[in-house]
Image 1: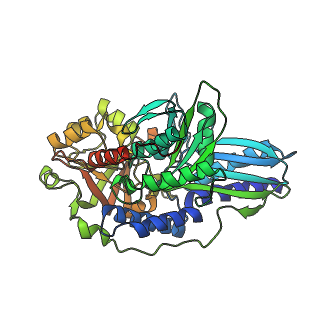
Image 2: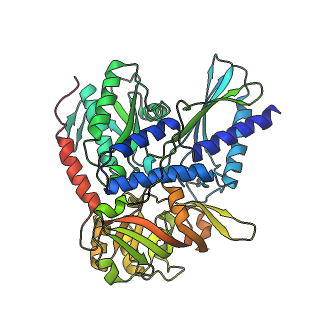
Image 3: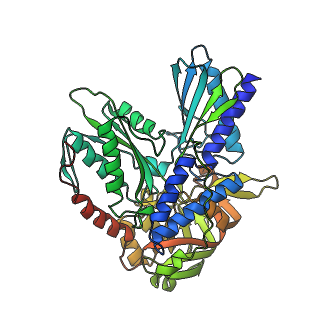
Length: 511
């Protein structure tokens, strides 16, 4: 009975972490939304995020399509069988994946094969620690790849773009943390949260940084110097103008938590774990004799349900253009950075494996005039053989920079949808070929799944569900033109302006 109940408790923890944004995170999102200037792209993004949170609640479906790398941190009383706990987690992971609460995300590093179960060598990550208390504490974080890729580690002393020399002191640490926010731009689904680890070695420093993400958003660091630094970073980062999704705006960072540990004389590391707004972490206390959950953490205060929006913000400062795929070059050339596009018709998903495949092979379908969506959806197969999209937000686009421009020209693709923007090679191809980059709202997996009316087919399923080419029929799929066919890039503009603002915080603040 204990084993069965323990497995159920782990299953409930996994599902709740994936679908239910914690109360402290909701408060932070609500505060950011209230401070944002109405009628801006950032305000539209925060409205979409709020809608997505509500939809995940209503449907009990994933907030974000990216399961990430599930990491469990567990404290057990002396004498508790840790192997039984790990077995219960394994079975619960498989069931949650089968039920569409998690996307199958475990990929063999050598063969590229997706296990389909979220299990694999070293996955999920499960770390145990004993303590003197008589109950089990289980923490879980689902940290997606988009924000994981914006983690960064500094070895002091170092030279930082815009900030100059960062030495082995509190002020050098300050500069590193500010730079970590700048370098993330919108690629980590800002507005985000950061955990910082000072000291240790390369491995323990990152572990300490990730551990900070389990702290409450509104707690106060017991170390007065670190409390002051956390407050400074949160205030200063929001003056950089990077904003939600990197669109510019008032909300760039929603939380900063800093931990410290000793180091060896030769090494001084500052490690930063970046987390997106879809801050999926949860914790429970479990009775060590029955396996029942006795307490849910992050549960203080009311559970905020966000007021519904009517999407008027996007029309106040931006032109709204309706497009139906396939799209002509003439239609694309008329679009400008800042336009809001509502797409209907067909689009095709394509991530890393698809882009590599298309550079070496013909496309399985005619892509001329069509749209590639950088997305790895959560997909369930129904009993009748049809497919259902359970979550479908954008993935970070910059990974496809080596391929994108060449593929667009080779196959006649007119638009690419993703998040975080792309680089100069893609921008040049957009100008030459007549294409646009459309920035969707990162993490808004339910919002975009609702725009998908039918799965009309799938190709290259051998790459696994996230990496296959899904044929989707969509209605009113909303995104913002952030790179156009005239050589303009909102991402490059925000990067330049935020770097200029970063340089104004170069002077010493902490000694």
